[in-house]
Length: 441
Image (cartoon, rainbow, N blue to C red; front, side):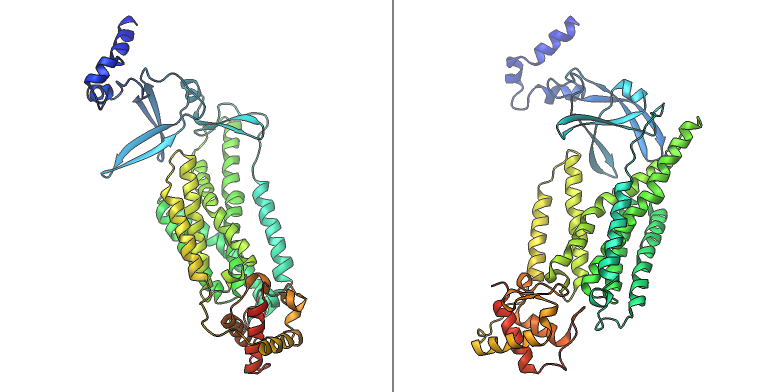
């Protein structure tokens, strides 16, 4: 003990620091032994245990700079794979916890208190009498979402689902196709996971391709606004299906094995972990798809399916930043890139500038008469006309350009029919002058 104390004091002496500057003592002592450091806690890997093909348990022997476990501690583990160094952060477990099967722990502070969470490699030695299940959150989210889909979209299919300029569907056909797409979403997703689960990155690319294909096909069948909701519902169905068919059954398998006195098979937990990661990354894309209906300039774009794909990619990218940050690796370049992508997306979605001269008062006045008499007030909200319709877009919020109004009135889209054979060209131009002049005023 005396020799160790003397050596430690010698390595920390100001004279030795001066002689070994600017690098410091550790730069030279680590050449002899990587764990000979004065201030940085390091450790040797003294044992490696492989319980599953995809997991490794390491037993570490720390140096004297390690003073014990503290809340929030993590270990940076760097390995070289195919010539590239890869670093991951892990929470350490004490020797006692490791013997009990603990592979990591987390100290949390929220809601006015402290919480200590431990994760086991497979299962604890003895099951507690009471277990808290996290499943109804997923189930009720999907059930309430499907109920809203029925109430809003299925009961008003002609207004929200069907766009005669896209596909001439009947109401039963539109509803049946929508339900079929939800079922197909889970079946295709589950098959992809079973086929490509061993290669997570390849699987991720395949899933993005499937979502993009779903957006394109749905855009060829339904109104653009419905396309966003249907694809968002398909992703939500994947998430709920993961909980119902994979994650919770895997948990029950572990519980049955413990109750029967058998050694639990870690495979169901590994599968559940993969599906849980997918649910984590799909959260923001689903949220963006569901909120899109409040922003007509999003689903009103000519390439609405590509807009949805961009939203999905951006949501996954932002979620990846937070996942890395929670693991102790903050990459500030990622939110900068995400912000630049949002700006680029906004520029892409912005309607083109119109160099045309301001509308004349006579044209605006004539356009108002057309708006009041052609049935526009029953579908749209426009304060100047006293219109409070909710079927079509809120024109005060959308503030459409003159060119966009002419296009929609002439060609129609979604629930809005074409007025090409009902209004003269002059009337269409007049109502476009009126709406583009007063919307949002």
